[in-house]
Length: 489
Image (cartoon, rainbow, N blue to C red):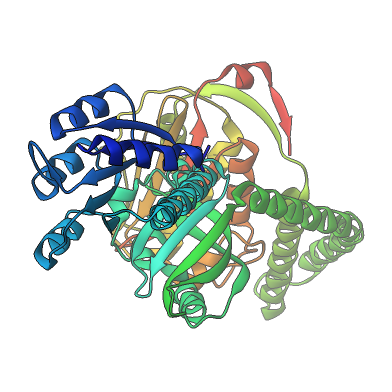
């Protein structure tokens, strides 16, 4: 019970000792006693003590001499010194040694009771604070949410274990470092720092979505609610952020949005392709008839060839869009990825014709088997290689490597020595119909992403000081892949 104290009464006068015991026991406290410092140490070893009432002068020494040892034996004990005489130096020394109260003899029972009751209230308050602290620590330790505290300069003060769980960062690795420089992707730094500065001026914010960097180089999407922490005077001392990991939710929403977009494109293209195919056939037939009637040397013949090329381009565009919108069916086969990209490089003789272009995979010694749709994965490498060749000036160097990325996946990197990609291009590159080239449908990289997604992999653009760099991960040979020979997305 918090209202009951275990009190050790250290008093050599038997009458005073008996009187004090009666007063304290009547109030419900448990009292033991000792007549000397030596006996007091024995009592301390026998059972816990929360309060010591200590006579200033005992046969084996003074309170000033015993208090340092008592503090060593019982660091958290509260001490009341009683004395028949008082002097300023002794009183000051007693309080320096952590004494809670100083009472003169003859002892006034009410004064003693008030002093002990104050210690009871203090003990109750401390117990409540410890309980609240344990509760807060348990919430921080078990909550499936990030709890982050930043100082007013953006330095990391603390975060809870859940942050470590999803990012891999330990507090000792990041404490004191700038949050925005170490944990926010470069393209988001300015925006998120602006949110932080607004919050630091006591403007609460909720629903802020931004990625954070993990220790292994990945990203997690976090939705934040931010507020400030203040001291007793009301001055803002730090910014508190509580974040929920919505990475899977954002990915699911993105997938659903892309599926809806593809369905809409597919419906549109079904009707458009049917009507356009008939029109293109008529154009092609008309061109063939006219080519027989117009002399080969005529200027009109060049116009006919231009019309034929335009019709073929339109047919290619329609087929590419129709193919993009159609479901992807995977027919998996065990292969080694280097065999695929080397074969694709050989297919690109026309694109490389007359150019100085080199495929460098000398640093790759990956022999792991993967189960992929060979034709689809060849298309991935073809699109990546063609984009690099279009972007690079001679001599063009395309570097490819792959390596094990843990026990279950392979990491593939394709890098070139071209001009690279700016922030806008990186953000839009996988969007359908977005292209950086003067000709093309803008579906090449979207198709790459869809194929990688269909293989349950992931592709990303990696920051690079020279050229563009793409990384994608694929699962190694798995029982799931062996069981499924056809998959649809």
